Length: 218
Length: 403
Image: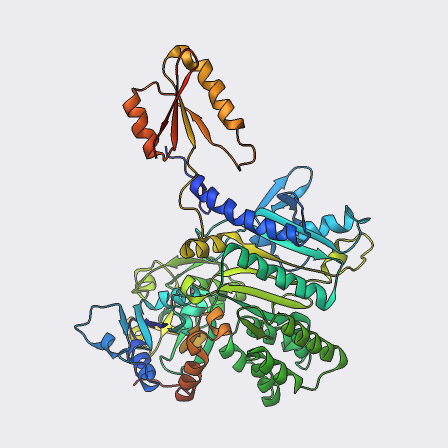
């Protein structure tokens, strides 16, 4: 059966609305009383897996799910072997370098060599500073990355920014943007090539209903 | 202190080996029936040899430093070694050369930290023969192998590397490798975001989608303005697809291309069906530039081959119930009734082993424990041994059947 991996968290609601619009109903995942991680669409055409956003490309790469929805940021960080089929346009945010507002730096290139950068996105951070040719020490954190510079553990952070409010309230300012991110529909490459479970039909349907557009939530 | 194998290494216990041998024997029989001969090349090669073809990145090779030779690598595949030896050591041989191998390969895993390092491959190389006939032989041989091991449902994804590469020529050189990378990785979003004119973007997306039922794909590609070599490649593909009609499922995929220039003609992947997890059972293609790289005078020679990923085949066959589920039991347990009977016991066991030479194999164990007969019987039953031969000091034998 066609299997779709859906990300817990910020993208879930929009993902489920989109799939519902093409006839795949996984809205049971939005029910707060639901504890099931694997459900079938009521029409019996597909099943949904509810997984952590970082795990969506894993299920798709290994072919346990033929389709998945995940932010571009996760794809940039993990570089999974998947087919990136459609830019869904929602879940807009950006990957940015930020420093405390009182720090003297106004651009990432001004950061001193061998400084410390805290991030959940260690590969993105590493690649970015490699391109700038600034050797840095990346400190991996799993959340509340803003505390890195606040406590003095690091000079800067690399993190996802959507409205910028969290940065502002923690006294940080954005220096540079690494890239813009939106939700992407991804597919298992072999299933895509072989058009398993009429994948192309679903991709066409989803493609019709998702024009890439920048939608900032207020 | 626990002594564990390094991450990525694995032990194959007797049952694993029995299953693996079953697969390899069935494949080898087919290879031999088609006139292929086994070749064994070194596990260690110079790194230069391994990466010369351009398909292997040095960082994916497990490297070994040798004080005299410099950097060596554990082979990540066999074709480079076979190409090297074919053009230097077998130069006088008549062509085509039909060679097969069955060997372990090693890969440094990048993304998956604890991924496997050592794999097994069985495959063939058909050297010195270009064109449709050789292409057809390789794909039909592959189909014969799969039917010999009992895999009925599988898909071929067939591409044409040279044709696809030439279809990329309209793109400006500066951006061509980005287009190629996006097509190779099926990165539709990346392709749509490249700065291309609307016509070129349409052409790029056309190429990315150029797959499906062979007749339809051939028709689509025929509508392009083709030059004579492209026209010939399409005609060849058409003939090949006709010859391959008996195959269970064939997808013609002209977006199947690598980011490096290694394959020069047909290129294919063999995929198991969805129920068995769509594993890549094997892959291969034509490499008409490769042999020339290894030839001292750069003499070109066509070549085509494929390899099976034995682990993936193993997994699929386990699911199909094709493989042995037990190691073979011994036919006989020969037991000395006393210490004085030991010499006679070994003599009788040897006699049993040499009987029935026309049968595949008679397995005879000698009981070493000197335990009471009842206990020996119990253990023999557990081990599925068919008969016990009790030998006494006089050398006379009492046969007891446990069936």
